[in-house]
Image (cartoon, rainbow, N blue to C red; front, side, top):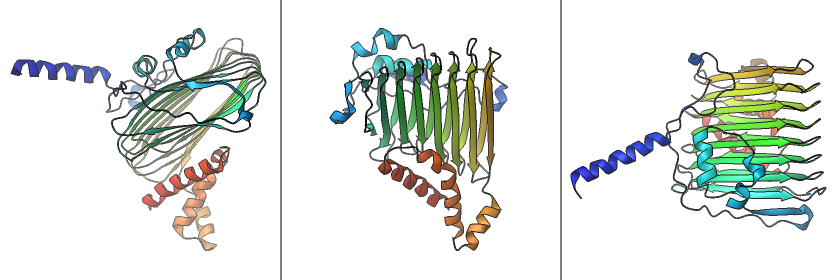
Length: 386
């Protein structure tokens, strides 16, 4: 092959790499002073090729779950007018475009009207080096039905992996969805997770997000409370160690009257972790008597961590109630001393205090085996910190 041809090929590959680089992700709704470093995030990674189909195995469901549909994602479903109506860019336009146009896996789940599933539906994505997971998921919760879905992202071999996912959710009148995401990727992996939901009258969604892994963890969640008395609650537990970068951007939009929302995040930061939390509750015009609350607390176990939080309340409606708070601190020395006088070592006492802070969130997960796995991962990272 001629030298100039080789050089031209290398130049093309370099240009493609630059255009795929992950920059200006997870933009904040209202920009602030750029020196704070919270407006958006850029990471030293590129979008991975998802041309190889990921072999997702959907679990067989018991009759008691009474699902109308539970299949692999297809172009027919993804291009349905309902899902096309979502004008949502997730962590960024480039990333969401890749999911919609080049996904290599994903699922579609639809409940039957009025049916309430008794057992959680569990989906597992295992990441391997050279096999990125680019998942396009959609969930339709029909009127009066209720379902619990657990999605688990995990590295199979501990090596570098890449995940870019988008989940779209629609809850009809009186529908309830409990949506749980567990992220335990390897420390060299990249995790881009986006989820958007729309809710009709008296519908509800309860998120539980557990962020424990990945070198870069970038997540974006949006819920639009369109119907009267609809409700969204978001509970997040995160643990950052080593040189991990965590960027969380949550937004709940109140459109309907008497809508309610809550954002609660609790985390543990170790070593040199860099974390940004952005939580926004937006009261739109017409959201009369809407109520929204958000609170975030981080336990700092190192003087080298970088912890930034941006709780935001936006409002164009007068008759609403909104509260927000964010705080961080080290382990209380008096509590630590008290436990040590009761026979616990310092390491054991620290672990008990930390687990007590996050236990209310983890205990919301309906499966004991998943709770145990989460606690074990937390303890493993804390052991490494000692």
